[in-house]
Structures are given as structure tokens and as C-alpha cells.
Image 1 (cartoon, helix red, strand yellow):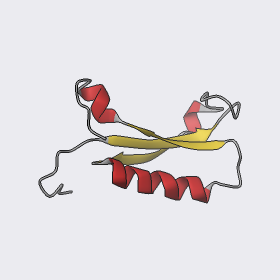
Image 2 (cartoon, rainbow, N blue to C red; image 1 turned 135 degrees about the horizontal axis):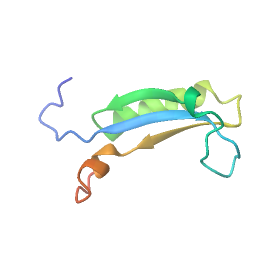
Image 3 (tube, one colour; image 1 turned 135 degrees about the vertical axis):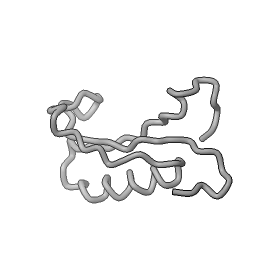
Length: 79
């Protein structure tokens, strides 16, 4: 996938059912849905939104966007 000259800022979208609506502990780690890796926040957000909307009927289901580029280079300040 080409970035059209933009710097690659990796993001991971994942989700699953939470134990408690107020927390971030997953009910079953083996059933976490790894949506994918994305080269920028905009495409990760689009994937997150699609999954969140598709699972709106399950109140315990949550999806997250992890900014992997910040883990790979903590000095990086991109979106």
C-alpha cells in the first residue's frame, strides 16, 4: 500500500467483549477481533467506526485504535 509520500504512522484496530463497561479488561482474550494494521489514523478510524457500528447491539463489545507508531518511536508526535 502506497502512502503517497506521507510518513507511515502505524495503527492497530482491535476489539472484543469487555468484562465491565467501565473498564478495558476483555472477557475472552482468545476471541479478540484483530481488525488490522493501518498506515494512518484516518484509515484506522474508518475501520474502527465500521466495526463499532456493526456491533452496536452488544453493549459489552468495544473496539480500540492503538497508535503503534508511538510504541515503535516514543519521540514521535504524529496523529
